[in-house]
Picture (cartoon, rainbow, N blue to C red):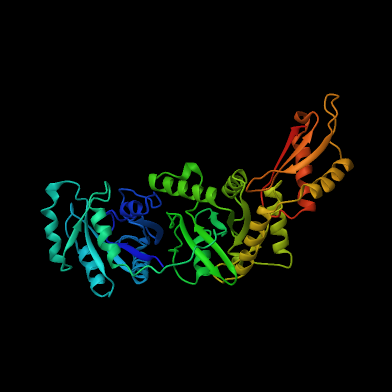
Length: 437
């Protein structure tokens, strides 16, 4: 068992910078603008051979004009309850504020070990200024610079000593757990979907588009399903992304999509599929990911007997030619058909990994080619003699032919359709190549 460390404090004291340093990565977005982090962000680190988990939290505010104030505070309390050790960060350059005193009062009410950490002491002249923080009544403190790393080693030595003893565990086989990115435009219900699954408000949800900024990974292991879900920031059109902060949020979302096995593309049932939904789908296809389309907020639609059928038919026309995709109509708030999404994710993940025996592949596909041969081009006859599946993480097939360069895209689509008709690849993108024999 690894210990859990939570980093708390008011906005813009350097919590996310320290978080990134502890996990030796750039998982949390950093910006000079205060209040960047909102949700709990999880990472893993190692110090002197000891593994631990780190939780980055949003900045605590009181009676501010931040509409996320109450939600962020709730996330901080949840993180403190989850942690074994708490790091309380303050800023030497601004000194003690009312918000620092407010967080200190929260710490006094907890029975967890905590460390007062004075950040931004990147010059010896600030060492004297740090003594001011004794007046918080929390005892001794550590002075660090999370930006350049000075002092963090001594801090980690002390923190690790307070973590519970690590239990020995037997070597486990390498995990084969699907990574699922939940993607879509802002405010379509991505965070609400993950909250509904895990049964707690781990992700802040508001009617305001762009609430989620970081890409947050959550392990879901219930009801016989085991996935890593990644909640991502909403993807807007480029011309609408004006702030640097949102730009980096979008980059994180795209990276999460690129690292996923399966993407759940959430669409707003009220708005229907828009051009930006199509852009996101094209990004999924370009990166060869599996996809499940989730039409959310279906409870807000007035229905007749054929409403779902007609909606699905229009949706498949718009996403053509890649129509072999599961489409599920849900209401995340009402928790309708959420289990169906879990089922389809598993099916798509298995389809994406599917391997077809070469003999069986040639038996089926060469017969399909005999029934409809590639047309001659410029008097050049095209003969396809052999097909094999490539050892890629997604379905990819190469057909060996004479005059391969004359095989048109329309015929490659025929080959793909025959592969999908005869073998189960629903939800998975596919690549078809034709090479000279």
